[in-house]
Length: 132
Image (cartoon, rainbow, N blue to C red; front, side):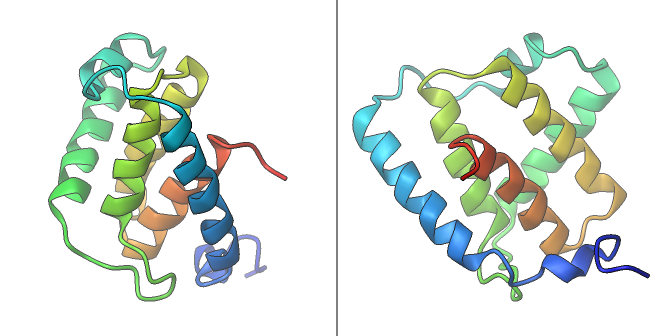
């Protein structure tokens, strides 16, 4: 199996990027006041995904938020990343990223290991601040 197809190839390889993204997140949060409490249903209402995908995403969102699990390869909690993503959405959701967020949450059900959860959520988190 090639490294690109091995989902665990990326384990522990994005810690430096996480630190950079966390710094961008902290600056963003200090510059933008949350307008509202994050509303996943409202985000889903703007989504082009089918209802079954939205429901699957919401189910995994709830599972992740209720978990205290830490990804040992990346030393991060998927719930912490998810909460940061939703705090950025509080300041004004981007519909395109909202669809990406819903899709990634729904896809977690296809392989729900903790490293897969953090990697999928990390992709959304970094996309919110642009790739460099």
